[in-house]
Image (cartoon, rainbow, N blue to C red; front, side):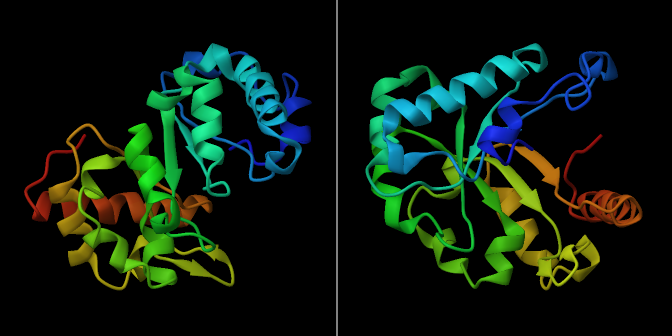
Length: 204
């Protein structure tokens, strides 16, 4: 998670240990929340390029991006068309993506569906946008936002909704349990495995 532009550009081997590839994990990158859109697209592209250089050794499979102001995605992809296949636009508290959906479709971009945001901020309407679930390339799942951060999956209000979503998205979509406390993560993964088995969905 590379959430701060300046701080992440300054990361060293303590922040990004060079032996990370040896763990045998797949990586994706969450791009900074404070990309300098107000300074122009050249500044944004420069910031992203600096971070890409830092994490190139991890070969990330995609970049999660919080929705920028309308029109900026078009400018970004026009300047960096190579980014388009990697971008996954995430629904956030501030934007459920509906305001930039035309851009997402026109540019043929992917979506990171944050189910915790969906249930916490009443964003279920986006599931009815034609073609929305077809564009999901990644899902962030957890029980919703709470005073302590992301709640474990046991707090998800309606697991049946998650089942419906998983049945509709592409089979190669990346599923991320976005739970940051270790014990809650373990419980959430156990619960997720149980649900997937109950729903007859393959998992490893």
